[in-house]
Image (cartoon, rainbow, N blue to C red; front, side, top):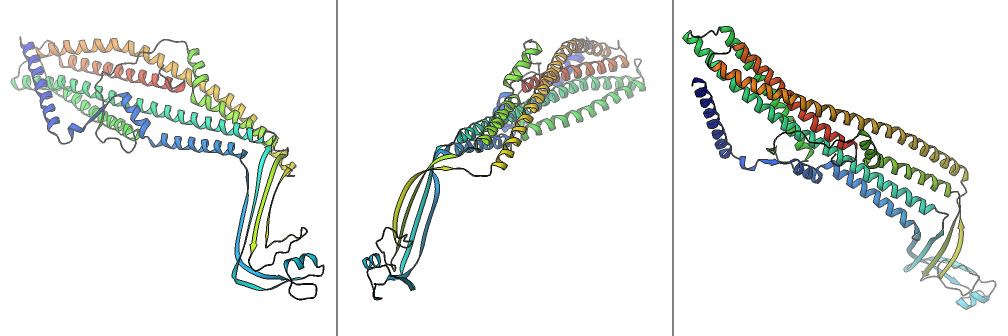
Length: 470
C-alpha cells in the first residue's frame, strides 16, 4: 500500500506539473507562434530559402545563357560606324580654271579639287555597315554548342549535389533535435527517481529509521549533480541543432523553430545488397553524372580546337551612305568619293586566321586536359563506391546495434521501475537504486544514440547514391 501511494503521488505531481507547464506556455508571449515543423516541411522550406541553392540556380542560368550565346553564333555579325561632323567646302574647277559643275569635273581631265575651308553651317555624315553571315564553319559552332550543353548539365548536377548536401544536413539537424529532446525526457524521468530517493533518505535520516546512511545521501546527490550536468550539455546540443536548422533555412527562418512531436524511431530500410547501391550511385548520384558531363564538355572543346584549324565560308554584305553639304559630287564611275556616296554589295568569302602554330598547341593542350579529366573521373568513381560501402556498413551496423541495445533498454527500464518500488518500501538499498539508474541511463542513451546513428546513416546512404530515399 505504501508503494502504491508513493507511485500515485509521483504520478499526481507529474500530471500537475505538466498541466502547469502547458498553462504557462499558453500564457507566455509569443508561444502561440512557435513553429513545429515536420522533416518534409523543413526540407521544402530549405529548398525555397537557402541562399546556397539560389546561388547554384543563378550559376545554372549563367551556363544556359552561355549555351544561348553559342547557338547565336549562326546569326550575322559585323560593324556599324556612323560619323557626324561639320562639312568641308570642296568644289570642282572647270578646264579653264573657273568654277565648274559636277559634269565639268567628270569630263575634264585637268580638273582639280581643293579644300577651301570648313563650313560650320553644313553637316557631313557617313555611315558604314559590314555584316558577316556564317555559311559553313566545319563544325565549329556545333562543337561549341555541345560543349555549352554539357556545361549546363554540369551546373545542374552541381546544383543537385548542393541540394542533396542540404537535405543531408537538414536531416542531421532534425534528428539531432529529436535526440536532444529524448535525452532531456530521459534525464527528467531519472531526476524524478533521484529526487524521490533523496527525499526518502533525508526523511529516514531525520527520523533515524531504516538502514540508510549519510553515504547514501551523498551518493544520490552525486548522481543528481551528474544529471544536472548532463541536462546542461544536452540543452546546449539541442540549441546547436536548432541553430543549425535556422541557418539551413536561411535568414527568414523563425526564431522559435522547433520540430514535430512524432516519436523518435529508427527508419526502416529495405534490405538490399551493397552492389545495388553501387550501381545506383554510378547511374544517379549527382557527382557521378557531373563527371560524365564534364568529360563530354572537355572532349567537345577538343573537337572545337581541332576544327578551328579549318577556314570559314561566309557571306559578307556591305553598305555605305555618305553626304557632305559643302562638297561637290562628281559623276564618275572611277571615283571613290568619300564625302558623297551610296553603295552596297554582297560577296562570298573564305576566312582563316593564319595562326596555325598556336592553334595546334591549344588543341594538344585541350586534348591532354580531356585525358586528365577522364582519369580523374575514374578516380572519383572509385571514391564514390567507397562512400557507398562506408555508408552501407554504417547503416547495417547501426541497425543491428539499435535492435540489440533496444532489448537492454527495455530491461533497464523494467529494472529501475522494480528497484524504485522496492527502495520506496525499504526493500532495496541506495546502491541498488543508483546502479539501476546508471544502467538505465546508459542503455537508454545508447539506444537513442543508435537510433540517431541509424537515421543519419540512412540519410548518408541516400546522399551517396541517388538522392532518393533508400
